Length: 168
Image 1 (cartoon, rainbow, N blue to C red):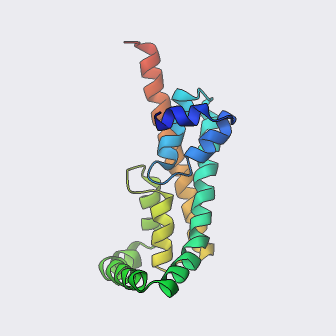
Image 2: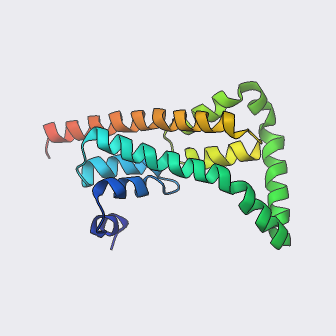
């Protein structure tokens, strides 16, 4: 059974399935919106709202959960302590200058451009690694998710319209 078949088989409303699919890492709303529109046949604006809400929800949860999870792992594992020490040092050494130059604009662009590896999961991690306050990071993450959702929605709508006009 494919992942698509699994989600379709769930006894849940398509709006909730879209919300949940859009919370998943890697795909986020880049998967949720096309899935909702093409497979679940949700209207464009409902797919947009449900996917955006799911991605924003996971972004907020991640932002607030990264610190307690990291602290727990560091306290209970010497290997995790070394890993996080390496990760924080490496990331801050390589990217502090760029973050100082561009700051929240860099975070916005990184999350807003719907490419693999970018998105709110990585954006929340970046905000955490650079100690960006919630009052600054969360509005930027949310705005970037909306921008990304607009790009993906219009792109999906265009592709579906082309296929509908030219059935193969």
